[in-house]
Image 1 (cartoon, rainbow, N blue to C red):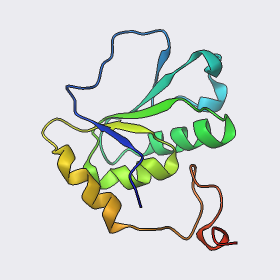
Image 2 (image 1 turned 90 degrees about the vertical axis):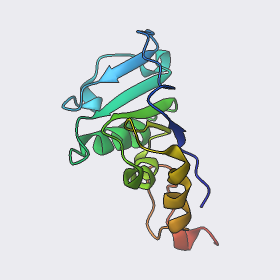
Image 3 (image 1 turned 30 degrees about the horizontal axis):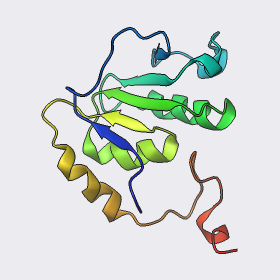
Length: 131
């Protein structure tokens, strides 16, 4: 499996108040946001701590139900062992927690070559790929 998730260090992440970047609180319902997603290029979803997974659901809703095609970025307490699941639920980039080495990230993607079930990115199950 080739990694398509863009991995950023904390220093590479720019949060300059750009109006095309939406910061979505992790208790917000993406289906209820009152903003035109066509005008948004990036949505930042926060993991206040690695055990809080609400941003996974938000990313999935944004990709699958709302059809958002821009960058969905994971911020906050992002660890390497979360990256594969982040990609599968619709994230396109992730800002690693300070002190986490991005060069170790590919190991997580190499560990899992395929998934039987579909996800936010690959909407057909694995068994249907050869059909």
